[in-house]
Length: 305
Picture 1 (cartoon, one colour):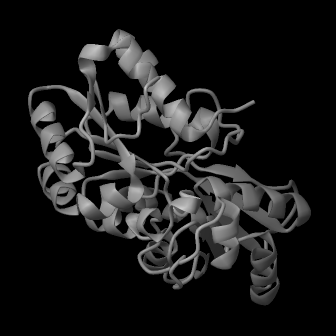
Picture 2 (spheres, rainbow, N blue to C red):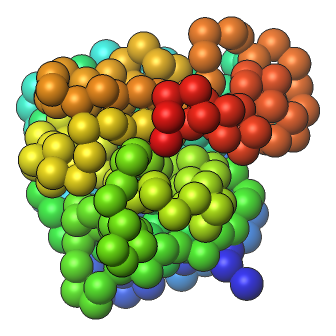
Picture 3 (cartoon, rainbow, N blue to C red):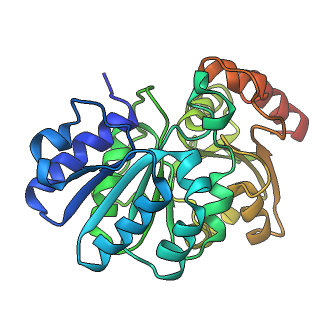
């Protein structure tokens, strides 16, 4: 059984730190008493409490000293509360900081509106020089952590909370920046369905299994540079694209792809403009926002997929 992205991150970072003594793990009171990194590398583990902005500033200092700091907190606090420090330290100065933002989208569920985050991709995409990854499943999450540790670029890695998923198969040795394309042989596609993140990819897997004329493309990296790199390939697949993403339409990956692909019709299945004012399970909140299998199926029927 696959573990959640959060657990895969902690375990993978702990393993990487055995062979890379530059890796530092920083937490904002999310680690718990049995954090694997703390148990194995106590001298390189920092629990800084509820001080997100200051934590990014401290990470900048560590990066300047040649360390590789990974800082984990809620997506809402990383992208919003610490936005100025992220903009300056990671965007402007390009410090080698890796933010691992758990509880992305509305995966916080019962934590409520203050801890939900449907705006983070828009914010991070507007800060140049930051790689943005939204992995799906345990294997892809581990691979993204490996890539982040090897790269000197700033990273924002968006994870969910507790759900565990099997990642889509990727060829051995291929980067998570490469597209995963699922298409049925001999079929001329009527729609290119693009999935970003865990819930979206699970939905698109179900749609792809049901409808032969749909091509499913999974994207992991969604920063502006990464989207520019794949735009040509997407244009060649279909001139009709539907992006599924647990985010608002404003500032979403769909909105950026629409700018990159002016000759394509780009649609978005997203979480709308309502505030998720009710607590509940992850599924409950997504249902309230109109993000799910039935609404997606209906949207595909309307646009003619």
